[in-house]
Length: 260
Image (cartoon, rainbow, N blue to C red):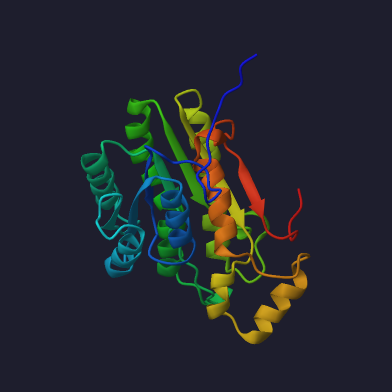
């Protein structure tokens, strides 16, 4: 009996040869790590960010020639920006195979001080953006018969998190539900939609006090924050050809904080 073959590049990453990806919020942190992971596997990567200079810096680090990496200005609150980004990648490389919805925003305003405007802003960035991007990119992917969409959500969307505010937790819970909806909607089309729900990530330390960092580390059974390369590796699995049987899954990456 013949088995399906697959290859891994020398660095151990999943192979993304002949695949084209767009990563939102790719100018730093998790998005930057994901962009490097996919590019290291042989993929072409469009690094998008509201901070175009940050995106350009990452794209240049991936490929100074610009042949296999490009930077795009993208505000995830804007449907027009998503449409333009999809067109830009398709025009440059022929199609979009992979979408990683990583861009997000957290604000730790005391609950009683959250204004309706701030609530709406968090929901627009963290949840409505997932709807808009999935709506736009999934149609493009369906036409090509292939696609991988990975939504970076949060532990906060599952259990309220450790230091999260209510609007952040609610928006990430909504992103998880949108993942499930689009996964079922697209099942059988060649397009998969999945999510990752990370717990505390080391990039968050810059926004926390020493006391908060110590408290979080004491609460995480594994005893530390997650590294960005670890979430990038999980994203690569879901975004790869070998991840085709994940449909509507939410991968828990929380160091044991939340066990299901």
